[in-house]
Length: 477
Image (cartoon, rainbow, N blue to C red):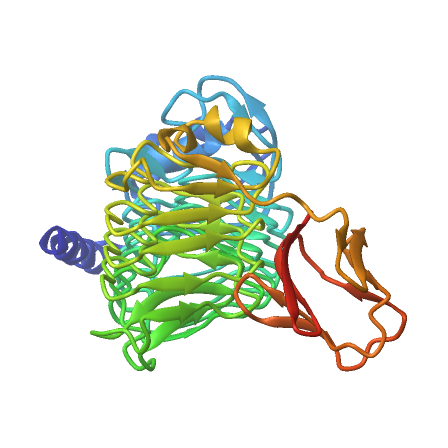
């Protein structure tokens, strides 16, 4: 693959050196007429073209397919008109082209063939978006400046631009779409504007020369394989605004080599455990974590238990795959998504407690593959039928409901009841009161109670209430 890229770049270099410069300026009064306004000789010899007036997707097709030596294109005085028809640039037959948009596939013909002669383009000042695959395989583009009028850039727009070393993105785009810079293997720097919220799948995959990336705190989502194989990437700044990281988003890169052993967090996500052996066989995930990522604890046979906070909403694919020493786990009620193979091969699992009333989704047939189907699966009271009839959860043959929800607990001298996550303890004068969550963390304490006390818990779940020397285990909805 790399050899093919080098040959393409060498051929392009010989072409540029040997090509005489031919300059042409033209005004197109009616969109779609560029082909007829250029002579055959102009189409085949012009290297520098400046256009004014109105263009549509038919004119971009002329530029792409009928001007084989065009290198410099100035569209600053152009207005792009909408077009609906079969004579545009879309290689898949699409017929809808929006106004003020660089058309999809503008300079890409498909089958890995882009306009390799194009080295410089100046965008229309009225353009607001760039269609998908517009510059794919334009191997002559070394740098490009996109005006701030652009609010969206389509998927794979600059994929396989092998010579693209730098690019300035506009500060109005809200996402970097799938494969936007895929295989731009000499791209050394890029600044992500603080308007971006999402970095798409494969967005920077195989950008081998990228060494540093700063992700602004506007970003919340980094999708799968986004930075995979960015082998020179050693410095990454990821803010706590990032709450979701897709599978293998940072696969085969070296950014965490300098991190200390233990759980490595990227944003609010538990990305991976680093180290040949566990520092402690019982792992506690940091409060505030929102996701356990793809392969986060893959193959950690030395992990016996893990404490997951009630802020985690998703468990990625293979997160605990082949954790053969894991014996028990409690999944908090905040989790609503568990991906495929998450617990694949956890043959040592003896019990599983899940506090979500509604069974989490996205499971596959292999999420719990090779986990014994006879282990107790403890579910919230009232959810037995839901788990018994939901795909994958119904795999378990020993589904049990958790203890009864707390409605009223009476002791010799005091009573306990709750309302709207407020635990009310009456007649406990002068006694000490402590409330612990299921992980043993103290969530409330009164050293010397008055006649009536009201304590608040912030999440539903299992709690242990200790009044004086007596402890009571309850579940709060």
